[in-house]
Image (cartoon, rainbow, N blue to C red):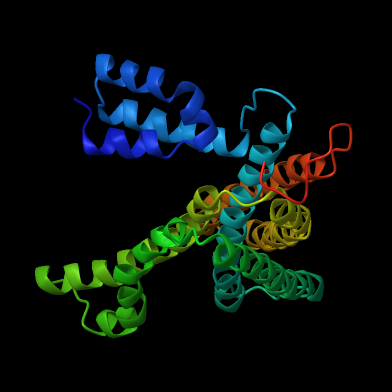
Length: 284
């Protein structure tokens, strides 16, 4: 028997991967057991499968799945980059060293680029919503219900922090104030990507989403450049303690920038493929 964590890890893989290898992978996990190391390996493999999906061929179906994986990945990277902007502003406000105008300018450009990318994503979401209203596949949007229980923790987090202290009860109140919003942010990043996968959009909508994802990837990369500038200034002007805080954030930001560029490039290439063009009028 596979425990709940193992089944969740197996379901984290893209649909195209599960269709081809899901039964074999599930049988392997049943034989080996779903221990902590196995579950960690499964989640790592799922992340790699989303970032670098394996497509069986260059058929219309293969290109559709490539675009679908690219759109889902771009959304997750945009959310991750958006969450880093307040942290970067906080670092600049707390550090005693004078911040060069170039660094602040890069951060401002990144912020406006991310807001512009958010409008691009909103247009894509509206296109997906219009198609859903035409096809009636509203059940595909059901994963968004997961946002409901985590949203209140985001709203009341400042109030909970007022009562946080070192005694046991208040400690757990403070932990909820931190972990609750974190759960909401993770859910907000993951559930729309799941919706895109479950909606099975038409080739026409997928091409729009995949091509617009290039602009979103550039905005994410701009945030990565701003993060490099900020962290470089921290490393050059502060001690080792500051590096322990900023270096992990730098690694994450660079990773999501690379993932956004690679995934958007693959999705755009699939969208622009002309040798065997995708029928834009029907689902593929």
